[in-house]
Length: 308
Image 1: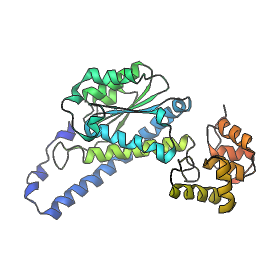
Image 2: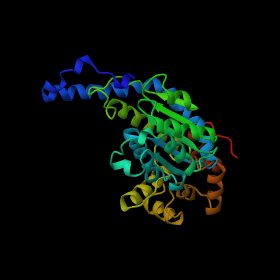
Image 3: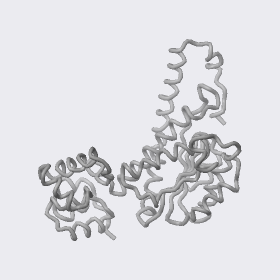
Image 4: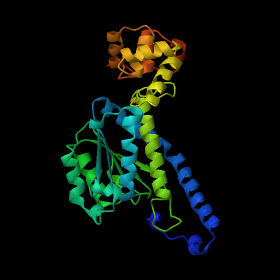
């Protein structure tokens, strides 16, 4: 496995000066970022396959061990506050359980039974999307989780850092980032971990955009849980509609803090019709406004998706 190779260049690393070590580590991070460019088509394919399953009510499930598992938790945990993704439609299968998020659990990643069992306990089904992460691409726990999820009809996506690895072959769709040898041999929390985090950032953000949770680069589906976010919500309504901050706050109150509904109210829709428009277009504000006849010149730039 390239991720486990020892680089002759860094054999005397610990004898280098601090700045030289940091430069080597920094260059490694840049190299990891560069590997993502060739992965973009695979990420786009994975999003396109995931959208209809999640629109049908499926869950987003992250599976992994060690560093990879923790990276999955970080990405998934941020979807609820950022995009108001429902917590009940988010799940994690981490080798060693919740304890492994903060502490290493020895031998947990080697358990095939635990990996498959996690999918059974989660009752994975055909509408679910399961993302398995493993730098090596051969972690037994993750392979078993992906294998069980696939057998149960879920869409499975593998993210790995070694070409031809078992995870990429087992999953329905594979995303490869060839980060190669680490500056500190085998320390895949570095280049491999960085690449995995970027892949998940790109995947989940594009996914939320395609699920109608972003409009004009704004997080219109966010959960306004504090004063700062409530102000941001009002600013978004005002920015989109030009109704003024006082009116924006009033429409937000009527919409129960929901930015998209407030935008539709400010654009002339009655409350019930605003609900109908959003339901018709799977929560996509752009298409709902198009249907309402607002901003048609701008909205025509993106072809509308078929309504159910």
